[in-house]
Length: 178
Length: 133
Image (tube, rainbow over all chains, first blue to last red):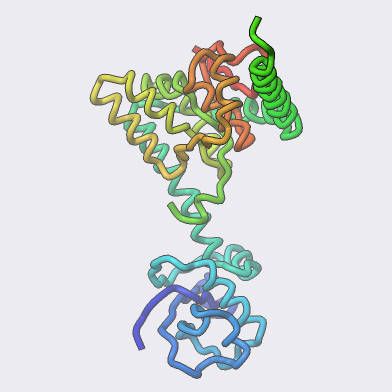
């Protein structure tokens, strides 16, 4: 068996352990044939290829389903990690059907903002919280003024205008030359 | 770009004037970008706008700044569909510029506002955020 993709997140320590922090273990290995419940044979090639290295003997059917849903959302190359988070974060992650995807998206959101801020620093542009809040308010005002229905009305008016123009051009061709 | 990234909606479009303002170091271009990304959205630039702006920027440092901005994960460089050419031609006539027309089309496509310093979008005719000078 060879280490492969990040697949499972489980609490390996109970409340109060690790100084109040919940430890999250993330590991996976390539599956050996015939190691899974029979119903998983319907879950597709990915489900039949990988299983977590954590002890799954006590996993319920819903835990397995959650695991394979998560696997389905993490199809790219990944690395295994062991991280510690405060209890409130652990509780939040436990509510997620796909905690790995949730954490990945949150980190990527932060990475995007950090990347822009690095660019702004490189360009010597100093933004302020007040300015950002004002920008947010301006965009919200425009979005309130322009709901999708209004945009659609404008588009339809333009499309009709262009249809009329095309129809006029076609009918002009039908007119006999003077 | 990952699938998750592609799921983040484009909520702000930069036209050529907004890109030029960013290159010039305008905080009025930078703060809307920060805001839109902080709110877990992306900003967009049409491919035509990117090409048009790059054509007008000579300074190597400014060109590098533009390249870096467009390469950000939060930036979506957007196509203009061929089947929309009738609408595109209308907005080209309305604004007098095809790059602005592509930005308008993208704003409809993504329900996004346009960040600009241009006065070619009419008066309340389009979802525009006019930048301060």
